[in-house]
Image (tube, rainbow over all chains, first blue to last red):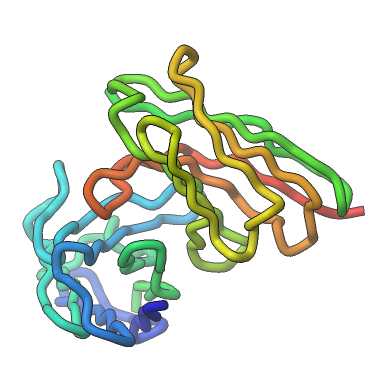
Length: 104
Length: 117
């Protein structure tokens, strides 16, 4: 079974800064199957990125995904106040443990 | 507008049973694979069950296999999760999700299940 490891566990940044979140798989996975979600407190997760790099409907273009093989990245180019949340990567039935993006 | 609305959560004693429901609207329910994903308090996301569009194929996480049963009713546009032999570690918010490709594109608001005596 594939294990997804996200880093860092917590990322402290200020609005306007660039955020880089990592998701590493224990074995090579198809980019087609790598997904990112955003979850705010008290809310359900929201689909952000599918197929490693395709933005879901309504997702701002400051969010981008990249990567292949075992290493994938979610980048938020310029943080807005509403972007501070927990981010999860997913492949198949497996989720990463999440990265909490908090305001510095 | 796609909507998924879960219900049926609550407090149940260890060893007890509960049935969760998810009412789907805004899309052709029978055309989509559906899943249940749960989240224990303060923890991450855990996939627990899948059902094909037709309902003929189901899968379960090892943590719930033999105790939980997923089903769907196309006439009622509803997804269900029958949970039995509940344990304290089953305490979580349970989300109904629609699957497109290998992603979960829509999620319900979740229903909280608390297993405690």
